[in-house]
Length: 300
Image 1: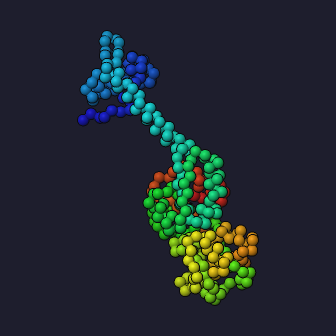
Image 2: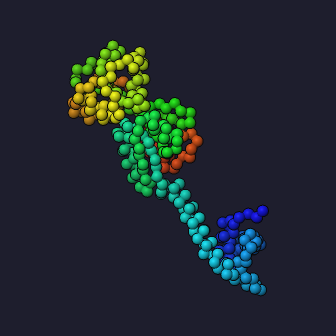
Image 3: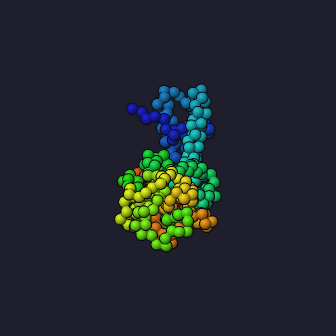
């Protein structure tokens, strides 16, 4: 069975049609005359039409050849445009970077990095969506985004997870009457304001509590709220204590609206998330390179 029309056949046909000479076309394309003749003959045989009149040593387009020439040129123009698009995509001159991040990262840590990214790659559109760690992992797994950046550890074998930076968690309350050093008894008897289940902030706090031998479900929780800002505002209003990122509470601590115990809860990592098998977009690689430069963490 004969093959379908090839791009090489189109290129050779156009070269011959423009020069009205097989030898001149072969010379211009740096191939043999026999190769050009064979390609034209195969194209004509495949479709059962003559594209050229061959009169003596001369060659002229037939009516079919005249009609086919603009179509062949249009096909090659589209191919060239497609190749240019791929080159531009690889060269970060077009495309879209889709990132999903958990709340602390998206609201406080990531924006300065995205500003630098846009300054360096102004032709790349950036789409940032914000959700909690569990939902972010689902979106990376399903391929809806190029990259996830989250606060919590994700147990999913389809995803690569690695630390990008570190953040401090602080225990905060509305008055300066917090103890200088907290202990397990004080934590058990305090009233808490919590983030929702699935949040990296909550998962990190629960991990710290278990290190002190405290089961999180045993705590007195006055409110469970869906954002860092709502938790911080509730704590400022006297609803209880909470554990939040130092990035989130820095302005409230500076103004005296919140107070933190000197004994910080410790550091936690901000993690990158990628699907292990999906294509690594050049734009996501470029963002990770900026993060690596800024924070000194290796990327996966």
